[in-house]
Image (cartoon, rainbow, N blue to C red):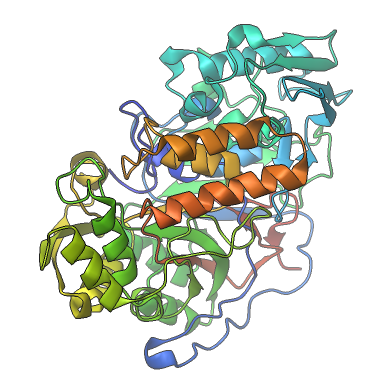
Length: 528
């Protein structure tokens, strides 16, 4: 599986569909990484400061996607840059994960958290001039839930809504009647698969790209080039750019070379490795932007395997590595230690709890599990620049606990089909920013198709159910924190760190911010 078509896995969906997630990972504009041995990397300099000027065309290089690439948001296989430009959602998240208006201007939850009413924005038009109405929202949700669509978001929503659960209230309001309470429901509608499409458009939306977003489609070819132009009828502030042109370049180094040659202005869906970032920083025409804690790196332990059925073995591995060393060796210190908690520290419901480095305790746990020594393969690939350094760092760090890891490199093209969720131990990663209810339920709930650890804990599942059903914010926060503690203490997640994503960008670009793989389309542009 190739990474610009990112991980996803539901049913047999490519994991690429899901990785971008519902993310909102707001970037800073400058690189602040640590070099090996703790030496600081020079801050990115020469990037355009201040606001972008009006007009101009931004050129973005993307990795090539599958010929099956689609502009249908419900099942998109990699067209993340297009989605945020072309479409709008009912709601969106800000950098703190707080739900904000988009096509809905307000929403109300019933006292039992089972009925949600969204009041819609007036005067919004589709790119073809037709008026936006509540029926478009109804149709979009039904399209997401349709099994034929194979939307990753269907697994998130289908446990408490069906196609009959959503109804138009006139033309300017939509009512969701949930089968079970969910006080976090509004945040789930901010998922990147939840962009609203026109009523009846399922057969054509994959190529037409008709939305209500700040840009409209001029051209698109799956796995090839494309272009979007400013939508002067957009309901919000108008974007600075006249147009955005997308090119498809297969090799990471070729994308970097195009940036350094001034042929493109920004490289998307590409996390630069440390050495390449230094090359870009030394360029007179380009620099590196750091998207803080944009990705969380995991080492899934397949709980259904003979190696990790015993929770003591999982806990031993969680105690066996030194997170400071792994962070330094894996990403040159450019990130944040996670201590095996997959919930980022910026999340409002984050619990400051984790399993600490303790090789002696790791040895004791292994002995208790009947394993005086423990050796196994850890699988990795060049699919992402951090996966192999992470595996090597972990290998060296766990030796003091008597654990021997044999690093096995697999083909990037087949890693997420032949290795992921199949081998007992592997490296993986996700994008941060998804709502906590989606993160914990979609990636760790028993039976979820994205549960890469095959983790199953009825008490954990019941705690998540209780959190969803709790209207009181303080009590709901406590329940989500209880779920985090259960997951961590049970060895359900081996998460060494959150890493900053390093993005290659021209010094001509101003106003750059990134939300997962969605740019701040209104403010990004070219310097005056």
